[in-house]
Image (cartoon, rainbow, N blue to C red; front, side, top):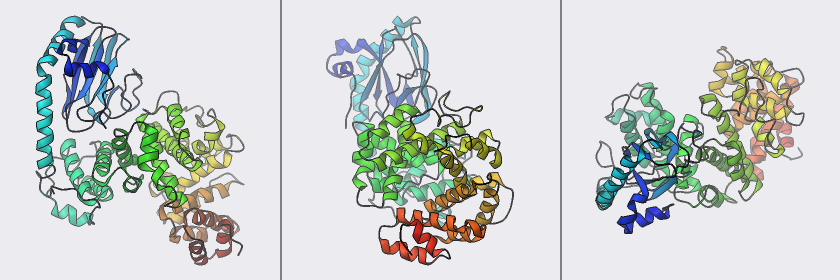
Length: 520
Protein backbone atom coordinates (compact mmCIF):
# COMPACT_ATOMS: atom_id res chain seq x y z
CA UNK A 1 0.00 0.00 0.00
CA UNK A 2 1.44 3.35 -1.00
CA UNK A 3 0.87 6.30 1.28
CA UNK A 4 1.47 10.03 1.00
CA UNK A 5 -0.09 11.72 3.97
CA UNK A 6 0.50 15.26 2.69
CA UNK A 7 -1.23 16.78 -0.34
CA UNK A 8 1.71 19.16 -0.60
CA UNK A 9 4.04 16.21 -1.05
CA UNK A 10 1.89 15.03 -3.98
CA UNK A 11 1.93 18.50 -5.50
CA UNK A 12 5.71 18.56 -5.27
CA UNK A 13 5.90 15.69 -7.72
CA UNK A 14 3.96 17.48 -10.43
CA UNK A 15 4.34 21.24 -9.73
CA UNK A 16 7.99 22.25 -9.19
CA UNK A 17 6.92 25.79 -8.38
CA UNK A 18 5.28 24.56 -5.16
CA UNK A 19 8.27 22.55 -3.93
CA UNK A 20 9.45 25.35 -1.66
CA UNK A 21 6.23 25.01 0.38
CA UNK A 22 7.91 22.33 2.46
CA UNK A 23 11.34 21.13 3.36
CA UNK A 24 12.18 17.55 2.42
CA UNK A 25 14.27 15.14 4.47
CA UNK A 26 15.08 11.91 2.71
CA UNK A 27 15.00 8.71 4.74
CA UNK A 28 17.65 6.45 3.27
CA UNK A 29 18.83 3.03 4.39
CA UNK A 30 21.89 4.66 5.97
CA UNK A 31 20.18 7.58 7.72
CA UNK A 32 18.45 10.92 7.23
CA UNK A 33 19.58 13.31 4.49
CA UNK A 34 20.09 16.03 5.58
CA UNK A 35 20.36 15.27 9.28
CA UNK A 36 19.50 18.85 10.32
CA UNK A 37 17.20 21.49 8.83
CA UNK A 38 16.02 24.92 9.96
CA UNK A 39 12.49 26.14 9.24
CA UNK A 40 10.09 28.93 10.22
CA UNK A 41 7.38 28.30 12.84
CA UNK A 42 4.46 26.74 11.01
CA UNK A 43 6.80 25.23 8.43
CA UNK A 44 6.25 21.72 7.10
CA UNK A 45 8.85 18.99 6.77
CA UNK A 46 8.21 16.08 4.44
CA UNK A 47 9.95 12.81 5.24
CA UNK A 48 10.40 10.92 1.99
CA UNK A 49 11.49 7.30 2.05
CA UNK A 50 14.08 7.03 -0.71
CA UNK A 51 15.48 3.76 0.63
CA UNK A 52 14.51 0.15 0.17
CA UNK A 53 13.55 -0.47 3.83
CA UNK A 54 10.59 0.87 5.83
CA UNK A 55 11.31 3.93 7.99
CA UNK A 56 9.44 5.64 10.84
CA UNK A 57 10.28 9.26 11.83
CA UNK A 58 9.45 10.23 15.40
CA UNK A 59 10.43 12.63 18.16
CA UNK A 60 12.99 11.62 20.76
CA UNK A 61 13.39 9.77 23.05
CA UNK A 62 13.18 6.24 21.67
CA UNK A 63 10.80 4.46 22.05
CA UNK A 64 8.28 6.72 23.84
CA UNK A 65 8.50 9.84 21.59
CA UNK A 66 7.35 12.15 24.40
CA UNK A 67 9.41 15.31 23.77
CA UNK A 68 7.12 16.32 20.89
CA UNK A 69 4.48 13.59 21.00
CA UNK A 70 2.56 14.76 17.91
CA UNK A 71 5.76 14.47 15.84
CA UNK A 72 5.40 10.74 15.20
CA UNK A 73 4.28 9.07 11.98
CA UNK A 74 2.65 6.30 14.10
CA UNK A 75 3.34 3.74 11.38
CA UNK A 76 6.20 2.75 9.05
CA UNK A 77 6.62 4.82 5.88
CA UNK A 78 7.12 2.44 2.96
CA UNK A 79 9.74 2.91 0.21
CA UNK A 80 8.61 5.64 -2.17
CA UNK A 81 6.09 7.15 0.27
CA UNK A 82 6.13 10.45 2.14
CA UNK A 83 4.87 11.61 5.53
CA UNK A 84 4.67 15.30 6.40
CA UNK A 85 4.51 17.18 9.70
CA UNK A 86 3.91 20.87 10.39
CA UNK A 87 5.95 22.30 13.29
CA UNK A 88 3.92 24.85 15.25
CA UNK A 89 6.24 24.98 18.29
CA UNK A 90 9.60 26.72 18.14
CA UNK A 91 12.79 25.10 19.37
CA UNK A 92 15.25 22.36 18.51
CA UNK A 93 13.44 19.07 18.00
CA UNK A 94 15.61 15.96 17.99
CA UNK A 95 14.22 12.93 16.22
CA UNK A 96 15.10 9.39 15.18
CA UNK A 97 13.95 6.48 13.04
CA UNK A 98 11.83 4.25 15.28
CA UNK A 99 12.82 1.20 13.21
CA UNK A 100 16.52 2.15 13.07
CA UNK A 101 17.06 4.13 16.31
CA UNK A 102 20.70 4.95 15.46
CA UNK A 103 19.45 7.15 12.59
CA UNK A 104 18.94 10.60 14.14
CA UNK A 105 18.38 14.21 13.14
CA UNK A 106 17.35 17.70 14.28
CA UNK A 107 14.58 20.10 13.22
CA UNK A 108 15.35 23.69 14.23
CA UNK A 109 12.20 25.81 14.28
CA UNK A 110 12.43 29.61 14.31
CA UNK A 111 16.18 30.19 14.47
CA UNK A 112 17.45 32.04 11.34
CA UNK A 113 15.48 29.64 9.19
CA UNK A 114 15.03 31.45 5.90
CA UNK A 115 18.33 30.78 4.15
CA UNK A 116 18.57 27.15 5.20
CA UNK A 117 15.02 26.31 4.21
CA UNK A 118 15.39 28.05 0.88
CA UNK A 119 18.59 26.24 0.00
CA UNK A 120 17.13 22.86 0.90
CA UNK A 121 13.94 23.51 -1.03
CA UNK A 122 15.82 24.64 -4.13
CA UNK A 123 18.09 21.61 -3.88
CA UNK A 124 14.97 19.44 -3.61
CA UNK A 125 13.63 20.82 -6.94
CA UNK A 126 16.81 19.91 -8.75
CA UNK A 127 17.20 16.49 -7.16
CA UNK A 128 13.64 15.11 -7.21
CA UNK A 129 13.95 13.45 -10.60
CA UNK A 130 17.39 12.17 -9.66
CA UNK A 131 16.26 10.61 -6.36
CA UNK A 132 13.35 8.94 -8.17
CA UNK A 133 15.79 7.48 -10.68
CA UNK A 134 18.09 6.29 -7.89
CA UNK A 135 15.16 4.62 -6.08
CA UNK A 136 14.09 2.82 -9.24
CA UNK A 137 17.63 1.67 -9.90
CA UNK A 138 18.08 0.54 -6.29
CA UNK A 139 14.83 -1.39 -6.39
CA UNK A 140 15.86 -3.13 -9.61
CA UNK A 141 19.32 -3.92 -8.30
CA UNK A 142 17.92 -5.29 -5.04
CA UNK A 143 15.54 -7.56 -6.95
CA UNK A 144 18.38 -9.34 -8.72
CA UNK A 145 21.00 -9.32 -5.95
CA UNK A 146 18.94 -9.69 -2.76
CA UNK A 147 20.64 -12.02 -0.28
CA UNK A 148 23.17 -13.24 -2.80
CA UNK A 149 26.24 -11.33 -1.69
CA UNK A 150 27.37 -13.09 1.48
CA UNK A 151 28.50 -16.67 2.07
CA UNK A 152 25.50 -18.92 2.51
CA UNK A 153 23.01 -16.58 0.85
CA UNK A 154 20.21 -17.87 -1.30
CA UNK A 155 18.65 -15.79 -4.05
CA UNK A 156 15.05 -16.84 -3.39
CA UNK A 157 12.58 -16.88 -0.51
CA UNK A 158 10.81 -20.05 0.55
CA UNK A 159 7.30 -20.14 2.00
CA UNK A 160 8.32 -22.51 4.79
CA UNK A 161 11.59 -22.44 6.74
CA UNK A 162 13.95 -25.37 6.34
CA UNK A 163 15.08 -27.18 9.48
CA UNK A 164 18.55 -26.41 10.80
CA UNK A 165 20.68 -27.43 13.76
CA UNK A 166 22.10 -24.27 15.33
CA UNK A 167 25.38 -25.95 16.30
CA UNK A 168 25.91 -27.18 12.75
CA UNK A 169 24.86 -23.79 11.37
CA UNK A 170 27.35 -22.02 13.61
CA UNK A 171 30.15 -24.37 12.59
CA UNK A 172 29.44 -24.16 8.86
CA UNK A 173 28.61 -20.47 8.63
CA UNK A 174 31.53 -18.13 8.14
CA UNK A 175 30.34 -15.20 10.23
CA UNK A 176 31.81 -12.20 8.40
CA UNK A 177 31.15 -9.42 10.94
CA UNK A 178 33.16 -7.71 13.63
CA UNK A 179 31.78 -8.23 17.12
CA UNK A 180 30.27 -4.73 17.33
CA UNK A 181 28.90 -4.29 13.79
CA UNK A 182 25.12 -4.13 14.23
CA UNK A 183 24.29 -3.71 10.53
CA UNK A 184 26.46 -6.62 9.42
CA UNK A 185 25.05 -8.91 12.11
CA UNK A 186 21.56 -7.80 11.12
CA UNK A 187 22.18 -8.77 7.50
CA UNK A 188 23.41 -12.23 8.46
CA UNK A 189 20.48 -12.85 10.82
CA UNK A 190 18.02 -11.79 8.13
CA UNK A 191 19.61 -14.35 5.79
CA UNK A 192 19.27 -17.07 8.43
CA UNK A 193 15.65 -16.03 9.00
CA UNK A 194 14.79 -16.24 5.29
CA UNK A 195 16.18 -19.75 5.07
CA UNK A 196 15.42 -21.28 8.48
CA UNK A 197 12.84 -19.07 10.16
CA UNK A 198 12.97 -16.76 13.18
CA UNK A 199 13.41 -19.37 15.93
CA UNK A 200 16.63 -20.62 14.36
CA UNK A 201 17.79 -17.05 13.73
CA UNK A 202 17.19 -16.06 17.37
CA UNK A 203 18.97 -19.20 18.61
CA UNK A 204 21.81 -18.40 16.22
CA UNK A 205 22.05 -14.89 17.72
CA UNK A 206 22.26 -16.37 21.21
CA UNK A 207 25.07 -18.66 20.06
CA UNK A 208 26.92 -15.72 18.48
CA UNK A 209 26.65 -13.85 21.78
CA UNK A 210 27.85 -16.88 23.76
CA UNK A 211 30.88 -17.20 21.48
CA UNK A 212 31.47 -13.42 21.74
CA UNK A 213 31.03 -13.00 18.01
CA UNK A 214 28.39 -10.37 18.82
CA UNK A 215 29.07 -8.13 21.82
CA UNK A 216 26.37 -7.88 24.47
CA UNK A 217 26.52 -4.10 23.98
CA UNK A 218 25.01 -4.58 20.49
CA UNK A 219 21.25 -3.93 20.70
CA UNK A 220 19.92 -7.49 20.48
CA UNK A 221 16.30 -6.37 20.94
CA UNK A 222 16.60 -4.34 17.73
CA UNK A 223 18.27 -7.30 16.01
CA UNK A 224 15.21 -9.34 17.01
CA UNK A 225 13.04 -6.60 15.45
CA UNK A 226 14.89 -7.07 12.17
CA UNK A 227 14.32 -10.83 12.38
CA UNK A 228 10.61 -10.23 12.91
CA UNK A 229 10.29 -7.87 9.95
CA UNK A 230 12.10 -10.38 7.75
CA UNK A 231 9.77 -13.13 8.98
CA UNK A 232 6.73 -11.16 7.82
CA UNK A 233 8.37 -10.29 4.50
CA UNK A 234 9.42 -13.84 3.66
CA UNK A 235 6.77 -16.04 5.26
CA UNK A 236 3.75 -13.77 4.94
CA UNK A 237 1.66 -11.33 6.96
CA UNK A 238 -0.39 -14.11 8.58
CA UNK A 239 -1.16 -15.48 12.01
CA UNK A 240 0.82 -18.63 11.27
CA UNK A 241 3.90 -16.59 10.41
CA UNK A 242 3.38 -14.32 13.42
CA UNK A 243 3.36 -17.36 15.70
CA UNK A 244 6.79 -18.36 14.36
CA UNK A 245 8.18 -15.52 16.49
CA UNK A 246 8.58 -16.56 20.14
CA UNK A 247 7.57 -13.96 22.73
CA UNK A 248 10.14 -15.26 25.21
CA UNK A 249 13.31 -14.16 23.39
CA UNK A 250 14.78 -10.65 23.56
CA UNK A 251 11.68 -9.10 25.13
CA UNK A 252 9.50 -10.15 22.23
CA UNK A 253 11.50 -8.20 19.67
CA UNK A 254 10.65 -10.63 16.87
CA UNK A 255 6.91 -10.15 17.33
CA UNK A 256 7.42 -6.40 17.61
CA UNK A 257 9.27 -6.33 14.29
CA UNK A 258 6.67 -8.53 12.62
CA UNK A 259 3.91 -6.20 13.76
CA UNK A 260 5.87 -3.17 12.54
CA UNK A 261 6.07 -4.67 9.06
CA UNK A 262 2.37 -5.52 8.95
CA UNK A 263 1.40 -2.13 10.39
CA UNK A 264 3.09 -0.37 7.47
CA UNK A 265 0.98 -2.35 5.03
CA UNK A 266 -2.47 -1.89 6.54
CA UNK A 267 -4.72 1.11 7.02
CA UNK A 268 -4.96 0.97 10.82
CA UNK A 269 -3.45 -0.84 13.79
CA UNK A 270 -6.76 -2.64 14.24
CA UNK A 271 -6.62 -3.92 10.66
CA UNK A 272 -3.05 -5.12 11.24
CA UNK A 273 -4.32 -7.36 14.05
CA UNK A 274 -7.81 -8.29 12.88
CA UNK A 275 -7.27 -8.76 9.15
CA UNK A 276 -3.64 -9.84 8.94
CA UNK A 277 -2.23 -11.32 12.13
CA UNK A 278 -4.73 -12.95 14.48
CA UNK A 279 -8.31 -12.44 13.32
CA UNK A 280 -8.15 -15.07 10.54
CA UNK A 281 -7.06 -17.68 13.11
CA UNK A 282 -10.42 -17.66 14.93
CA UNK A 283 -12.06 -21.09 14.96
CA UNK A 284 -9.02 -22.84 13.49
CA UNK A 285 -6.91 -23.04 16.65
CA UNK A 286 -7.43 -23.58 20.37
CA UNK A 287 -8.58 -20.67 22.50
CA UNK A 288 -5.10 -20.44 24.00
CA UNK A 289 -3.36 -20.11 20.63
CA UNK A 290 -5.87 -17.46 19.57
CA UNK A 291 -5.41 -15.61 22.89
CA UNK A 292 -1.61 -15.83 22.67
CA UNK A 293 -1.64 -14.31 19.18
CA UNK A 294 -3.46 -11.25 20.48
CA UNK A 295 -1.10 -11.20 23.45
CA UNK A 296 1.75 -10.73 20.98
CA UNK A 297 -0.27 -8.07 19.17
CA UNK A 298 -0.64 -6.23 22.49
CA UNK A 299 3.13 -5.94 22.74
CA UNK A 300 3.22 -4.63 19.17
CA UNK A 301 0.40 -2.15 19.79
CA UNK A 302 2.22 -0.75 22.83
CA UNK A 303 5.38 -0.33 20.78
CA UNK A 304 3.50 1.30 17.89
CA UNK A 305 1.79 3.72 20.29
CA UNK A 306 5.13 4.74 21.81
CA UNK A 307 4.24 3.21 25.20
CA UNK A 308 1.10 5.33 25.57
CA UNK A 309 -0.92 3.05 27.87
CA UNK A 310 -4.43 4.57 27.42
CA UNK A 311 -4.04 4.79 23.63
CA UNK A 312 -2.87 1.18 23.45
CA UNK A 313 -5.75 -0.13 25.55
CA UNK A 314 -8.21 1.81 23.38
CA UNK A 315 -6.90 -0.04 20.31
CA UNK A 316 -7.29 -3.38 22.12
CA UNK A 317 -10.88 -2.40 22.85
CA UNK A 318 -11.53 -2.06 19.11
CA UNK A 319 -10.96 -5.78 18.52
CA UNK A 320 -13.99 -7.87 17.67
CA UNK A 321 -14.26 -10.30 20.59
CA UNK A 322 -13.49 -10.54 24.28
CA UNK A 323 -10.72 -13.13 23.84
CA UNK A 324 -8.82 -10.88 21.45
CA UNK A 325 -9.32 -7.85 23.68
CA UNK A 326 -8.16 -9.69 26.79
CA UNK A 327 -5.11 -11.14 25.05
CA UNK A 328 -4.19 -7.70 23.78
CA UNK A 329 -4.61 -6.13 27.24
CA UNK A 330 -2.28 -8.77 28.66
CA UNK A 331 0.39 -8.03 26.05
CA UNK A 332 0.05 -4.29 26.61
CA UNK A 333 0.54 -4.58 30.38
CA UNK A 334 3.44 -7.01 30.03
CA UNK A 335 5.15 -4.62 27.60
CA UNK A 336 4.35 -1.75 29.96
CA UNK A 337 6.29 -3.49 32.75
CA UNK A 338 9.06 -4.40 30.29
CA UNK A 339 9.33 -0.68 29.59
CA UNK A 340 9.58 0.10 33.31
CA UNK A 341 12.33 -2.49 33.77
CA UNK A 342 14.37 -1.19 30.83
CA UNK A 343 13.81 2.51 31.56
CA UNK A 344 11.65 3.17 28.50
CA UNK A 345 8.21 3.54 30.10
CA UNK A 346 6.51 6.91 30.10
CA UNK A 347 7.10 9.11 33.14
CA UNK A 348 4.51 8.96 35.91
CA UNK A 349 3.16 5.51 35.03
CA UNK A 350 5.03 3.60 37.75
CA UNK A 351 5.95 4.60 41.31
CA UNK A 352 8.52 3.40 43.83
CA UNK A 353 6.28 4.69 46.62
CA UNK A 354 3.22 2.81 45.37
CA UNK A 355 4.33 -0.40 43.61
CA UNK A 356 0.73 -1.23 42.64
CA UNK A 357 0.48 1.67 40.18
CA UNK A 358 -0.87 1.90 37.50
CA UNK A 359 -3.13 -1.08 38.27
CA UNK A 360 -5.09 0.67 41.02
CA UNK A 361 -6.01 3.74 38.93
CA UNK A 362 -7.12 2.24 35.63
CA UNK A 363 -10.59 1.15 34.56
CA UNK A 364 -11.74 -1.93 36.46
CA UNK A 365 -12.06 -4.06 33.31
CA UNK A 366 -8.28 -3.82 32.79
CA UNK A 367 -7.20 -4.46 36.36
CA UNK A 368 -6.85 -8.26 36.24
CA UNK A 369 -4.41 -8.19 33.32
CA UNK A 370 -2.51 -5.32 34.91
CA UNK A 371 -2.08 -7.08 38.25
CA UNK A 372 -1.28 -10.49 36.74
CA UNK A 373 1.64 -8.82 34.91
CA UNK A 374 2.90 -6.56 37.71
CA UNK A 375 5.54 -8.98 39.06
CA UNK A 376 8.60 -7.32 37.49
CA UNK A 377 7.87 -3.94 39.00
CA UNK A 378 6.83 -5.39 42.36
CA UNK A 379 10.10 -7.27 42.65
CA UNK A 380 12.09 -4.24 41.48
CA UNK A 381 10.62 -2.08 44.24
CA UNK A 382 10.99 -4.90 46.79
CA UNK A 383 14.65 -5.54 45.94
CA UNK A 384 13.80 -9.10 44.84
CA UNK A 385 12.32 -9.94 48.23
CA UNK A 386 9.38 -12.30 47.70
CA UNK A 387 7.98 -11.70 51.17
CA UNK A 388 8.09 -7.91 50.69
CA UNK A 389 6.54 -8.05 47.21
CA UNK A 390 3.72 -10.32 48.34
CA UNK A 391 2.94 -7.98 51.25
CA UNK A 392 2.46 -5.21 48.68
CA UNK A 393 -0.09 -7.43 46.94
CA UNK A 394 -2.10 -7.70 50.14
CA UNK A 395 -2.85 -3.96 49.75
CA UNK A 396 -4.43 -4.53 46.31
CA UNK A 397 -8.23 -4.32 45.90
CA UNK A 398 -9.76 -7.46 47.37
CA UNK A 399 -10.97 -8.76 44.01
CA UNK A 400 -7.48 -8.37 42.49
CA UNK A 401 -5.34 -9.57 45.39
CA UNK A 402 -5.10 -13.11 44.04
CA UNK A 403 -4.08 -11.89 40.56
CA UNK A 404 -1.29 -9.80 42.10
CA UNK A 405 -0.01 -12.75 44.13
CA UNK A 406 -0.27 -15.08 41.13
CA UNK A 407 1.92 -12.68 39.14
CA UNK A 408 4.73 -13.47 41.58
CA UNK A 409 3.85 -17.16 41.42
CA UNK A 410 4.29 -17.06 37.64
CA UNK A 411 7.92 -16.12 38.17
CA UNK A 412 8.88 -18.84 40.59
CA UNK A 413 8.94 -21.45 37.81
CA UNK A 414 10.65 -19.13 35.34
CA UNK A 415 14.31 -20.31 35.19
CA UNK A 416 15.73 -16.81 34.65
CA UNK A 417 13.76 -15.14 37.41
CA UNK A 418 14.21 -18.07 39.76
CA UNK A 419 17.97 -17.52 39.76
CA UNK A 420 17.43 -13.98 41.04
CA UNK A 421 15.06 -15.18 43.77
CA UNK A 422 17.17 -17.94 45.32
CA UNK A 423 20.82 -19.10 45.17
CA UNK A 424 19.66 -22.66 45.80
CA UNK A 425 21.17 -25.07 43.28
CA UNK A 426 18.35 -27.62 43.37
CA UNK A 427 16.15 -28.35 40.39
CA UNK A 428 13.50 -25.98 39.07
CA UNK A 429 10.41 -27.49 40.66
CA UNK A 430 11.97 -28.06 44.09
CA UNK A 431 13.29 -24.51 44.10
CA UNK A 432 9.85 -23.21 43.12
CA UNK A 433 8.25 -24.85 46.16
CA UNK A 434 10.87 -23.32 48.48
CA UNK A 435 10.01 -19.87 47.10
CA UNK A 436 6.25 -20.46 47.39
CA UNK A 437 6.68 -21.13 51.10
CA UNK A 438 7.76 -17.47 51.47
CA UNK A 439 4.22 -16.35 50.56
CA UNK A 440 2.02 -15.01 53.40
CA UNK A 441 0.11 -17.59 55.40
CA UNK A 442 -3.16 -18.42 53.71
CA UNK A 443 -1.95 -17.34 50.26
CA UNK A 444 0.50 -20.09 49.28
CA UNK A 445 -2.17 -21.50 46.95
CA UNK A 446 -1.86 -18.41 44.74
CA UNK A 447 1.86 -19.09 44.29
CA UNK A 448 1.06 -22.67 43.27
CA UNK A 449 -1.56 -21.52 40.76
CA UNK A 450 0.85 -19.04 39.18
CA UNK A 451 3.70 -21.55 39.12
CA UNK A 452 1.58 -24.15 37.30
CA UNK A 453 0.18 -21.58 34.85
CA UNK A 454 3.69 -20.55 33.86
CA UNK A 455 4.88 -24.14 33.33
CA UNK A 456 1.79 -25.09 31.33
CA UNK A 457 2.04 -21.95 29.24
CA UNK A 458 5.39 -23.13 27.92
CA UNK A 459 4.92 -26.91 28.11
CA UNK A 460 1.29 -26.95 26.86
CA UNK A 461 -0.04 -30.52 27.18
CA UNK A 462 3.29 -31.93 28.37
CA UNK A 463 2.78 -32.18 32.13
CA UNK A 464 6.18 -33.62 33.08
CA UNK A 465 7.36 -30.47 34.88
CA UNK A 466 4.01 -29.34 36.29
CA UNK A 467 3.27 -32.87 37.52
CA UNK A 468 6.69 -33.08 39.17
CA UNK A 469 6.03 -29.73 40.86
CA UNK A 470 2.71 -30.96 42.25
CA UNK A 471 4.37 -34.14 43.50
CA UNK A 472 7.08 -32.09 45.29
CA UNK A 473 4.85 -29.77 47.32
CA UNK A 474 3.09 -30.25 50.63
CA UNK A 475 0.46 -33.04 50.38
CA UNK A 476 -2.22 -30.68 51.68
CA UNK A 477 -1.73 -28.41 48.66
CA UNK A 478 -1.54 -31.03 45.92
CA UNK A 479 -5.21 -30.98 44.96
CA UNK A 480 -4.93 -27.22 44.27
CA UNK A 481 -1.91 -27.93 42.10
CA UNK A 482 -3.45 -30.75 40.07
CA UNK A 483 -6.72 -28.86 39.61
CA UNK A 484 -4.76 -25.99 38.10
CA UNK A 485 -3.13 -28.41 35.66
CA UNK A 486 -6.64 -29.50 34.68
CA UNK A 487 -7.75 -25.89 34.14
CA UNK A 488 -4.80 -25.36 31.80
CA UNK A 489 -5.41 -28.63 29.96
CA UNK A 490 -9.01 -27.59 29.32
CA UNK A 491 -7.81 -24.27 27.85
CA UNK A 492 -5.29 -25.87 25.55
CA UNK A 493 -6.81 -29.16 24.44
CA UNK A 494 -8.74 -29.22 21.19
CA UNK A 495 -10.52 -32.51 21.97
CA UNK A 496 -12.06 -33.84 25.19
CA UNK A 497 -10.19 -37.13 24.77
CA UNK A 498 -6.92 -35.19 25.16
CA UNK A 499 -8.04 -34.05 28.61
CA UNK A 500 -8.67 -37.61 29.79
CA UNK A 501 -5.31 -38.83 28.48
CA UNK A 502 -3.29 -35.98 30.02
CA UNK A 503 -4.99 -36.08 33.40
CA UNK A 504 -4.96 -39.87 33.45
CA UNK A 505 -1.15 -39.93 33.49
CA UNK A 506 -0.91 -37.85 36.70
CA UNK A 507 -0.87 -39.00 40.31
CA UNK A 508 -3.60 -36.45 40.96
CA UNK A 509 -5.79 -37.67 38.11
CA UNK A 510 -9.14 -36.92 39.78
CA UNK A 511 -8.20 -33.38 40.83
CA UNK A 512 -6.93 -32.71 37.31
CA UNK A 513 -10.21 -33.90 35.78
CA UNK A 514 -12.15 -31.72 38.22
CA UNK A 515 -10.11 -28.71 37.17
CA UNK A 516 -10.89 -29.53 33.54
CA UNK A 517 -14.60 -29.63 34.35
CA UNK A 518 -14.96 -33.39 34.09
CA UNK A 519 -16.50 -35.48 36.88
CA UNK A 520 -14.10 -38.37 37.71
